[in-house]
Amino acid sequence: MAIAKLGVVVLDCPDPRALAGFYAGILGGTVEGEGEWVDLKVPEGQSLAFQEAPGHVPPKWPAPGDSQQFHLDLTVTDMDAAEKEILALGARPLDTEDRSRGWRVYADPAGHPFCLCAC
Image 1 (cartoon, helix red, strand yellow):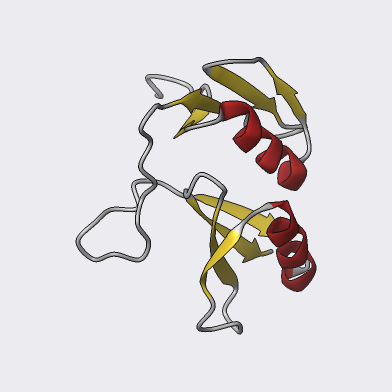
Image 2 (cartoon, one colour; image 1 turned 180 degrees about the horizontal axis):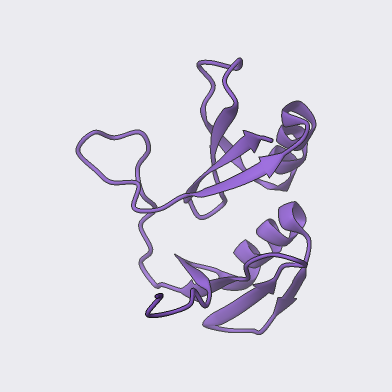
């Protein structure tokens, strides 16, 4: 029996509203809130929240001596089309070595790594 239910996944960042807008561009949904805490209500999915973290230092990827701490896997049906769209929104590629794999690694505008995964 579960002890708890997952409420929301929260990403620390310097600008919660801007990062919520970036992920809304990828996942759809509604950005709610202002200031230090902003929610992204995703249709038929898990909500994401964004918390202001002054002095935020993005994780390093790949870095054997440092942890990426956390990442999101986002499933897509067309990797190339999705890549064009997320790059236009401000994503940055982190891994361009092997384009034949079923996933590609990027950083969001605050530096959090995330993957596009073929479904």
